[in-house]
Length: 254
Image (tube, rainbow, N blue to C red):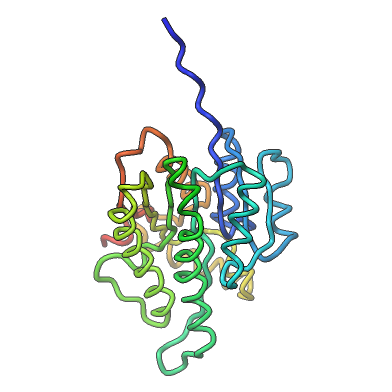
């Protein structure tokens, strides 16, 4: 009996790879033998993610800049030799009711959460098509369905738009052999609140408050989101296209 050839190690780009879900996803792919390029603005956190993982490379880049997509894709082609998976994970948020919204902060959220995935994916189309690749857009369960999000509407709107791109690109790019899927994490303990300046006790109080609302009685862990991202890019998942998977302990359906 002929032994089937071993699968080549996939080549993966992950934006926002220095912390949280991006870091956990980089580790999850690397532990499966993938070659990973993590992208972010802070060299120190990227190095922390890559430490101890020979398969993880780093590139410091601003994905919202005009030359950001070129820089990232060219770095991936040099380091990885191609692109099998693009994970659009980087995001930013700024709370505020409509009456207090700042134009620059609103623009920054749309530039990071929506425009950057558009133009990075656009730049990566040829390498992705050459490999029959997969795009994973990381949204949020808070923007699913008919839910509202007072005081965080701009962030939610940018993520709802990203979900629409996922569905639209899935149909548009299918003839080129590219799949597009999304994940919609709920509240996940990534430490983002503390990094944004929230006192540790206030952040822990927020997590406790949210855990009490989740039917499973807890918030999520970054590695739980990473597991789904990896699974959706595996060959066995190649019939999945255009879907956005909620990973939120059932909070979004309560």
